[in-house]
Image (cartoon, rainbow, N blue to C red; front, side):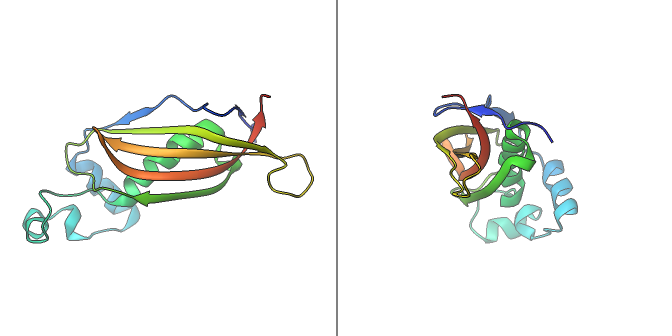
Length: 144
């Protein structure tokens, strides 16, 4: 197990760019996750549903954010992870994942062991639009 990452408010990993999202990306994720909803592969069904084009499944881009976070802090240090889907992701979109520490609390879990917990705000954008907002609680080392 690796040591917790040292953090301070405003810190975060370098943002990550993914895309453009292709039909192959969506098909691969559908196969891995079992999400075969026609919104992700059937252009006629998509048009009849009111969307302008095929959309990527939310769990795919939630996974992109989770990957950024776990690569930075280590999956073993993630205590909580949650996302809110704000806007769909379409074929051709280029996504940018970012994370920033918004608070750091020593002994944040209240068990008296001196654990430092950091709250991390997560964002996935497509151009100027936010596709996902999220947050995570991670075990960290405080640089203060």
